[in-house]
Image 1 (cartoon, helix red, strand yellow):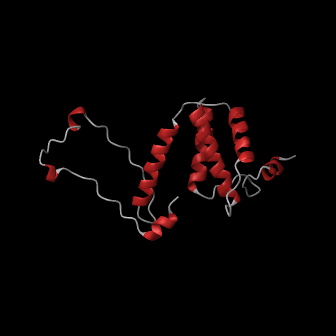
Image 2 (cartoon, one colour):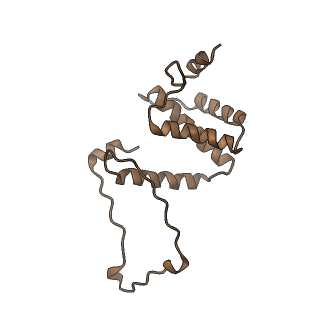
Image 3 (cartoon, helix red, strand yellow):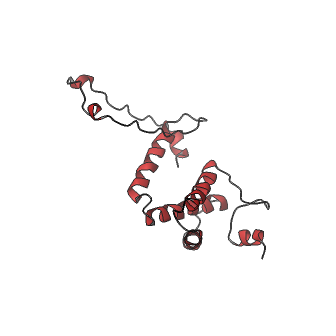
Length: 153
């Protein structure tokens, strides 16, 4: 069996010349798994077994494209192996996802979503020196248009 036949049998999206990334996050999650492997976070055989199990056990969603289902399951397998290897906790990953979700909702249409690093807080900055409660800064509410809600991941 050729590599192309194997990729077709496994439902790996491609164009005959190799994998295809239809969304930027597909390429990013793919490269993250490869990078973590190369850095020694897990063996490729551990990854391949977990990913194969995920492909077998997690069905595609109703109406989900082959590409979307494939990379959604790739991400699920990556999150699983990251948690199993204690590279990040499930809670840390959930918190980061929420930060990305909020960044997405705050980003005007057509602009890249940027997740800014939080600045390090110096010990003397942890106390609000303004003792007048009326002047204390408060986070602004997030405005979400109904059309943006339907586009949210």
